[in-house]
Amino acid sequence: MKKKYILLLCFFSFFNVSNAQVNLSVYSEVSIITADPGTELFEAFGHAAIRIKDPVLQLDVVYNYGMFDFNAPNFYTNFVKGKLNYQLGRQYFNRFISSYNYQKRNVQQQVLNLSQSERQAFFLYLENNATPENRNYLYDPYYNNCATKLRDITMNVLGDLVSFDALHQSRENYSLRALMRQEIFWNTWGSFGINLALGNQLDAIATEAQYMYLPNYVFQKFKAATRIQDGKKIKLVKREELLLNHRKQHYTSQFISPLLVFGLLSILGLFITYKDYRKRNRTKWFDFFILFISGILGVVILFLWFFTNHATTPNNFNFLWAFAPNLIMAFLLLKKTSKQWPAKYFKFLTALLILMFLFWILGVQSFPYAVIPFLVFLIIRYVYLQRYFSTLNQ
Image (cartoon, rainbow, N blue to C red; front, side):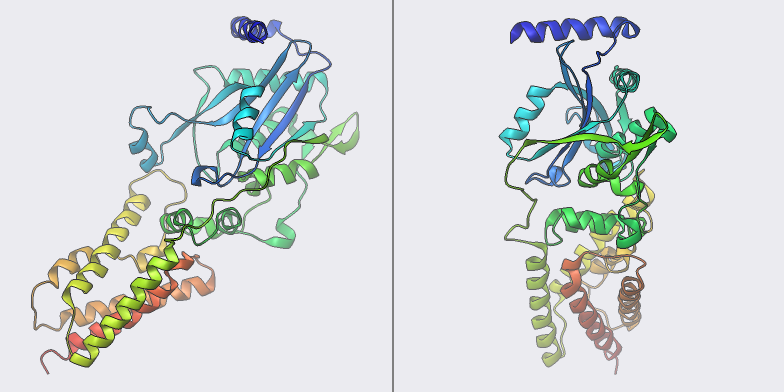
């Protein structure tokens, strides 16, 4: 086994010096590898990669566009700003498949129907991408990730010879957000965070090509894809193989879920509002808490919208309920006031919430489902505070 790895290492060392002198044999294969989701958030969408195998050259390598380095300079800062560099990694197939077997995740393979020259073109393309000067790319979870790379590489190599036939758009009309919710259950903190941070670009109907940001749809699209070979239309996939067969896993909801937290907070808020109404009073600490939290979330939304490079954070109408100026209002209302101007402010906040529900109904943007009880509570609380401040001088 060690001898095999030494030979493979020598092969790559030689190839990097003179890649034009290395040719795949007639027994070589190019395959699309797709892995099922795991239980962690970063595994929730599954994974996809390309495998090149040549028994004559004792070559069996997976090209993986999902690699990143936590220890890279400014990793977390760049992640927040939308400037996250991923890279193409090259792994021995045995190591790749062992890691997924350890995680107990299904892995499938689709061997492509390619001529020897086309397999060679895939190999050269991937090896060129794997060089230090080319392996890094600017990652985007929806438009440029490990799954979309496989679509783009195949179309780059085969050009007009390949066609990813329409499968879904004509009968499903899913948005990118709806596709995401198929993979991540809505009542998880991961789903809540994603739906809170990303704007209404995700709510546009996805094109057929955009479905392929998910490995599951990469598998389906390649399965249905056709290509032209010797003037005939044939299947792009020659055969399929189940490499690992485990029980399907999912990133699932935790006991302390978003709905539980927002539901309990809403019940507490309604109880406090009822007591305040009976006593014609206002619970200052609770109003501070609600305004402070919604204001902080609003600042984060505006930061992601205007000060980062994320393609999907602009036009985020979550700011209609997570309203950034609430952060200032939280401190202003700690002081006792007999003025009526806060009544106009809470009337404005109520109008924003009504506008938000209207946007939701009209399909302008879909919002996190878990906040629905909290939004109902906010309307009730804001209406009460509007009346409370209106009657202070009466």
